[in-house]
Image (tube, rainbow, N blue to C red; front, side, top):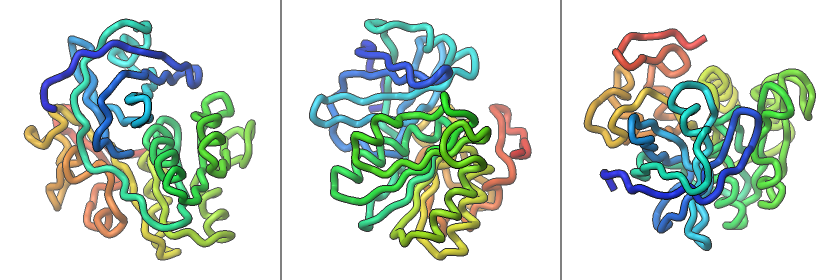
Length: 265
């Protein structure tokens, strides 16, 4: 659907000091974890990952971190207020195998939790590494527990679980277990390191990339990646490792709204 559907906010869940999940009634059909919606606040539009897909209640959820003018305005809304939604867009995660490791960093846990819940409903064993700067920024721990997945927490300051980077815990976990596949979403510097790790272990993996998007459906070309010309909003946002090998800018730089390159720190 390429025209926004105006929907009321059914429920707002405070996930952390900076993240809220907005629940909407939605006729769930073919939505896939890893896809995104374009969110319209009647002034501007931004892409946001789907963090909840409930085909029983016919609900979807969008988890939003408060980091700027747009997200601050949405965070100040209340249950019963309205937003425009269009989508879903993009290529989501492919679910396969019998044992999967999922690695999420920060708000990157949004598509990861949706993936986890769908995979565990299919009877797949899922281990999740949830990484954040500190314990009160860890997301969706209760939902992970209810899904039956195994949760491994990781914080930069050591306030919960493993003290260090999520990639360090991922490498340790991969050395101790056999997985059929790895999926990940988070800061690109984290995913670049994880990409190198899974390449060494020769495990199939999928990564959800983020790029500046305007239309969300492949028309404007704003989110095209260099050398291959793939549109992240259509050919992605989820890419397999063999595809990422072809994207030279992955983990190196991204472009802003005017097309200027910025090095990824």
